[in-house]
Length: 91
Image (cartoon, helix red, strand yellow):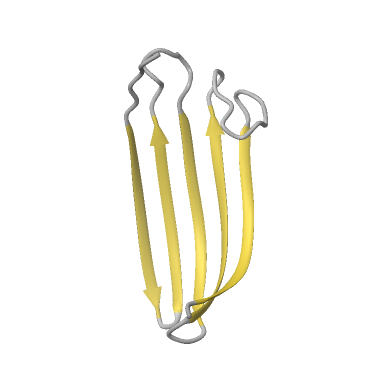
């Protein structure tokens, strides 16, 4: 079963001192052989650089699914969201 899908992603970053502000939006069109199978995702994030190699971060993301798709096992046509908070250190 071959199918095609168009998609795009737009992201932006604004820095102010040690702070980073991120916005991100992505969209996947319907699969060519399945109507109502598109999805949209958006993310908002904040990072604070403690040093050149260490940062703390937080982000929220949400995916909106159409009626004929279930990407996360949450049911067709549902919204999936997640919140993350963490610390990252590059060795």
